[in-house]
Image 1 (tube, rainbow, N blue to C red):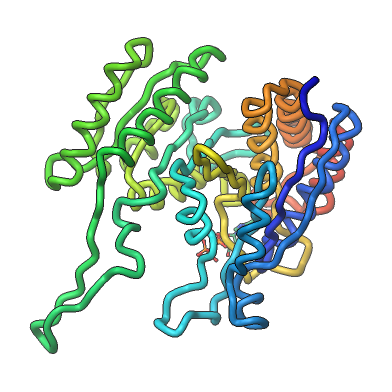
Image 2 (cartoon, helix red, strand yellow):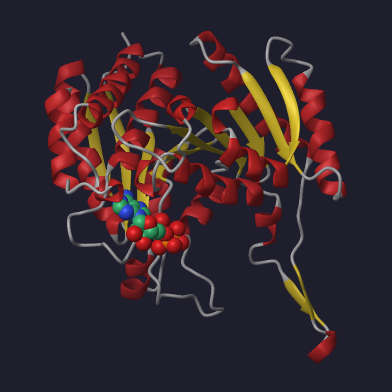
Length: 363
Ligand code: ATP
């Protein structure tokens, strides 16, 4: 008999993080009895406001709770005027990524009928791609390790890009396996490796590892692309891509670009996955400009909740959870397609609670 109850560590964070997390918990709680499962949500403190209140942005007890739970649901963290002593932002999500070795940043993007994106081409309706971002090294390895050499006119700031064989092999394997799974569900099953191998030694090394790993997946089609050309092509013909795999910094930038393809940050879910733990969060930040008004679009976080169910389903051999994920996605798509709700990002007037009500009503 497979597990029927799942513990979820919830880190709402700051700004609209709190609102979109509450919305997602409401959807998951409504789903639970319908699929005969129980979700035990426990909220834990972290983030910029917690830093102001306590001097800690990510308490050890919160990290321990993340380790103990079956999965982690995360809102958004950071506030514009809250900075650490060195002037950098409070970014506990990066600390969690490193602490739990969540090396795969997974950013799926698709378009929804009823919600027009920024591209006029009719083929934009077919956009359905996943960006896999290496999340533990690359240029982000430099965070906290940068140095300044020299002074005055001679001063130079240095950040180092670190690409390891092990780190690259595991993210390439992750992307190749994902493409194989997608192929089984009728998608193209193709991985586009995105790098800058024509300029940097680190990137030439990355490409070499990608090509080496791809040989172990003869059923998965692969190709290489330069990141600058990719920025162009993701605007010109995003429907031509299936799975993309790339270095941390390139992934950081391209994930915002692809969020725009879906019409806005409020539509972009995301997961940070490792071998032992996984965290699910919207791709957007705390959006202080709209916080506390009940107008944040919770779709990204609700879709991240569905990703969490898929991950738990695979990990625990509980296909009922995957059925639950499809029910959430279908309810959201249908609410948009039928015009029951339209987020403000798309010129509509639906607030957070309206969208939750529509999804719950469609489960
Ligand atoms: P970060 O640096 O953490 O990404 P940010 O403020 O630069 O934070 P976001 O928080 O992602 O970026 O928000 C950018 C803008 O997008 C916000 O100002 C807001 O207007 C809009 N936005 C982001 N998320 C949502 C959402 N869920 N619903 C509606 N609008 C959103």
